[in-house]
Length: 156
Image 1 (cartoon, rainbow, N blue to C red):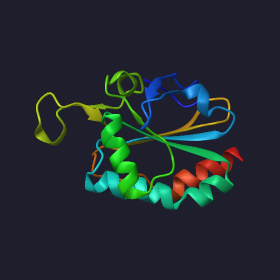
Image 2 (image 1 turned 135 degrees about the vertical axis):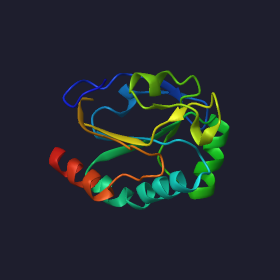
Image 3 (image 1 turned 30 degrees about the vertical axis):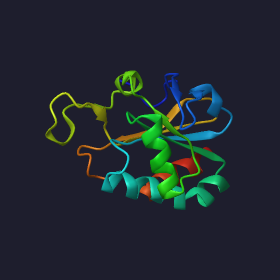
């Protein structure tokens, strides 16, 4: 299990342009890793749009926002376009990163064998150390966005 104060595990995932991105690409600024179960689902859409609408505040806090799901880069591209998401959405189609971060949610929506990311947020400092983590008990629960901002403020 990944703990607060430990270095965030590196990853190499593809973005909506099918270009590899690693955790190293986001170092140097605080980073919000927002794992979400699935593009085009109601709660995920609301969460990503709330993060989008918070970008001005998060930008003032010098923070990157990165969404991660098991969706294909093609689905993530359509999801980003439909919702005007200006931050990277990364595809963990192999499910290795969600396993490493301990946020694998099995049998999503009652679909046997359909494993997705549990809705969760990890905040990393500029050096890639985990300073905050939140994992939803239920994928229908959104993070407390005020707490996310508060935790980022602590890193400023």
